[in-house]
Image (cartoon, rainbow, N blue to C red):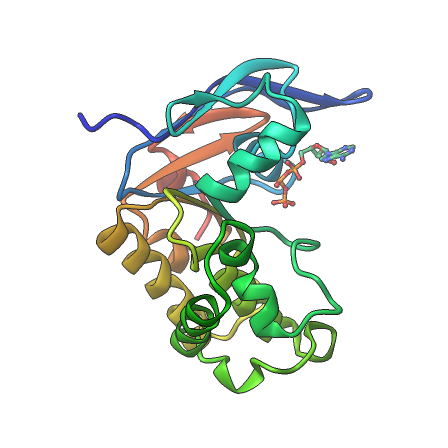
Length: 230
Ligand SMILES: Nc1ncnc2c1ncn2[C@@H]1O[C@H](COP(=O)(O)OP(=O)(O)OP(=O)(O)O)[C@@H](O)[C@H]1O
């Protein structure tokens, strides 16, 4: 089997008295697309935040691209995130004061790509996601669905080895949702990115090579499609 690029092992996380995650394990190989499914409140977003190094686990480990990230300082985790990860979370990761294209080119600019090539690559991603016409508008002035596609463009622009996305098509109609899903499929197939998608939508899950069910804070591999009501 190919060596996994992302592994979460026996992860647990509580917020005060609320146990969000009890025992979750996930392992993803390069080029794989994994759908995380499960009831509302079961711990999917918490798991994704732990895998991204945005939260520290109470127990368990996270290994990203050969490096344990759960015990790193916030500064080192942030550096690993910038280089190894693309993520699409439900809010917060884009800068409202910047234009759409400035947001998308940010991961490239922060890792040393020169302005011209960074701009060209960001525009290419926006074009693929059908939002090139919005490139020079401020993020705070575009629609929710346009901002969501900008977030996807930003997650993929620097061809990271791991892409994590929380309901990445939640604000989109069927056609634009498919543009987003095809962009993830291309990242997995052409660049070998490992992609983890949290979704409630079976159509989205059908793009995945594998699914993992999260139920009551625990992961159950391969059972999501059978267990999810249609
Ligand atoms: N920052 C937080 N503070 C307190 N409780 C939290 C926090 N984040 C999550 N929780 C709680 O942890 C549990 C798991 O939440 P989580 O968001 O991971 O679930 P989810 O499966 O992603 O849900 P949904 O499908 O509704 O987005 C819930 O009971 C939630 O209320």
